Image 1 (cartoon, rainbow, N blue to C red):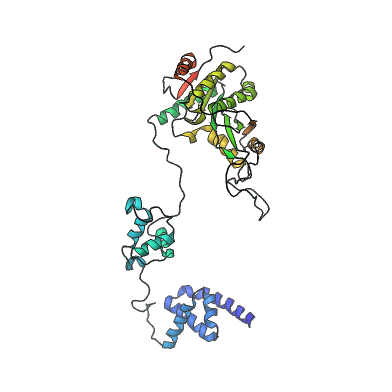
Image 2 (spheres, helix red, strand yellow):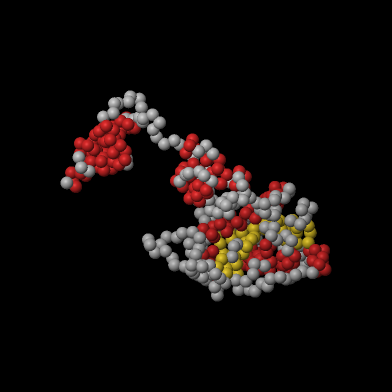
Length: 411
């Protein structure tokens, strides 16, 4: 009997697929009802399953057949039949829902949903308290339909208040970088990468592993005994190479300049023999900020040690994402270690050093075990002497653009 029923269902489904699209709603009900009656016991369920409709539709058709009602050409439902759309039955519903979703601009900012997750169930509940009868499924349909909403995440696009000379500073930096590269001079972009916990901690991203066997990591991201990895990077624009020092102490100006010093001693001086100038592009804040006195003091010491005239051009405030190192070096490091817990500082170094791209990027990484105390203050008198001895602010925004010139040639 089961085989017969299975065959009947397949035959019925094929028949309904061909015929039903050409019939109106009432004709479809009557056809399904006739088939169900001809099959006898269990026919309603079998027909409903084959046609992909509810049993109520079929039983309604059976009742209509048994009632012997006269045919009604041109009408699928009896007059007044069918459920009235929610927005017609409740004309104020759409406005009420719209006000709940965007209370800051369209409704009462003190609504109870102002500080609540706006799920469809919560929205339906609040509408019910306001006297609107609606299910959470219907809320979803109205949001996506007439109101034109969709589920969206935050988009990081707002950079805060923009400086009036923002674009002009970009142009100034571009002109300086273009001229230096054309002259064969070293140009580097520097910045600190986000600190990372060292240990068996979750890392964003995914990596290939045997199915059903994810890497087990700590539930909570509390710093352990191994502390954090503090990466500071140097990106050579002309050579498309990166250098990253992975420290474990503070991200300070001393650490930043020490990384530049190590890059120059190990790589830069060999790549640019005879160079007398170095151009650095950096963010406006952080350990290499333009207001940081210690940054300029450490650069002056580097200039004296190397004999390089060091020019620094800072990105305008609030535009750190435009610094070349962000998307030419750090973004590739992040992709390379995605899904890989940084179990030790050595693991972090190896993952950074393993970063490459199809365009030829290579990265050198080293562990820096030095100690870099925070909170070092440079007194006004010392800063004035430093400025008069080494610092040459440019005519264009001298606070952002300046050259530190050594007073002597290294012996």
